[in-house]
Length: 169
Image (cartoon, rainbow, N blue to C red):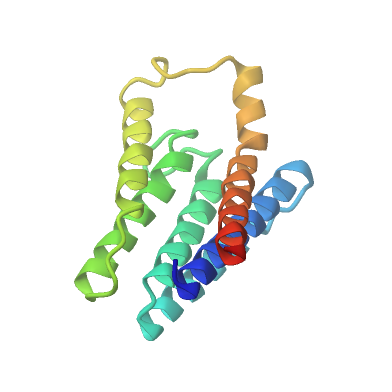
């Protein structure tokens, strides 16, 4: 594998680990402004990606924007959408928008945002259509709300390990 691809995977892994760590920290300690920082960072990274023609920056920026919006709106009812639906809806919509932006601007085409966006939007649609159909016990829901960023950390760590293994070959 080319060293550029290894570097990209290493960078993507680091971004996931850092994002997951920040999100986990915001769940474990009181950080009221974490969603606002994610919103701001997402907008800046997305704009940077558009200006430098970097699809990865657009995708990461939109994911940050979606996560920030989901966290900000996740515990409230806004625009007629009940609480609990925003957390999958906002990142899903942001990833779909990132996929569209990358396609419209003719950047390097990547597939990963679209399937993830579809899954998140489907989860939001199921939850919106029948809130009781997808209801977890309150204790389980609380555990998931706090610890879901660990999935980002694990995914990032796996990318880092894979990139370092390929670099060693």
